[in-house]
Structure formats: structure tokens, C-alpha cells
Length: 151
Image (cartoon, rainbow, N blue to C red; front, side):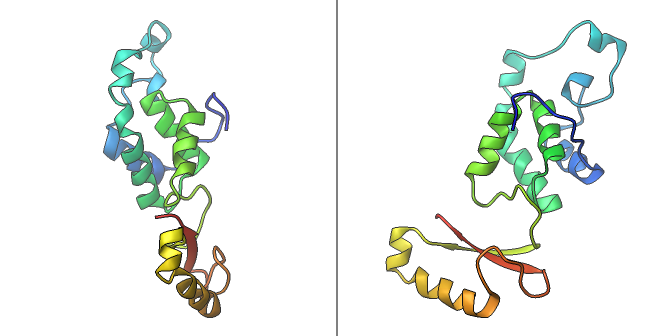
């Protein structure tokens, strides 16, 4: 992921999901339509920093609506919040419940931290592997999968 926004564009669903949380972009600097006024000034600084707390809700909206966070969807979030893509990518990949690649609509997460292993997580993982296959592999005709995740 780069510090600059690359060429990937969001789908209509991704744009609608983000705009439902953040509101429609007010200018071309935020991912909206460009006007002649956009060539003369840009908003940012303190006003942009006041909206940074909306990064996680915007990423959740993308995940909930589309099922994963695409590069185009992430770019739309970054433009709307004036957040560097590398920072937003870092947040999206830090949380294991976010997906940055397409995956089945149903995902079961099984914690495999030390405390959960002591409480029997390994037996749950073994049973899931017997019934559904390896973690991360689509099962049930591509409709479901399971993943090992930290609490």
C-alpha cells in the first residue's frame, strides 16, 4: 500500500456504504465531483483531523455491505477522510475481523490465543478442520469458511 491514493475506484455499493457513514463528499478533494473551486483551495488540517475517528466505522460499513474491503473502497474512505492509504491499510489489516480479499459470506472465527487453547480451542479447530476443511478454505459450496483469530 502506498502513501498516495492509486487508481482503483470504488463500486457503487462501496461508495454508498461509506457515504452512509461519512456523508456525501463535499468536494473533489474528498472523492466527490470536481469543480473549478476545487482548483483554488482545499480543506484539511484541523477540520480533517476532527473526522479521523470515523475511519473504523467507515471500514465496518464497507465490510458489512460488500463483505470485504477492496482497494477501491479503501481509496474512497481515504479521500473522504483525507487519511493516507498506508495508514488506513494498516488499520484494516490489523483487525482480524476485516477482510482485504474476497471471502465467503459466512466466516466463523475461533480464538487460538493461549488462554483459549487452554480452554479447548484446539479441539474446536480440529473438529472444524474435520468437517469443513483447513482454516481459510471455502466450504459448504463456497458459502462458508472458518479462521483462527486472536480474541
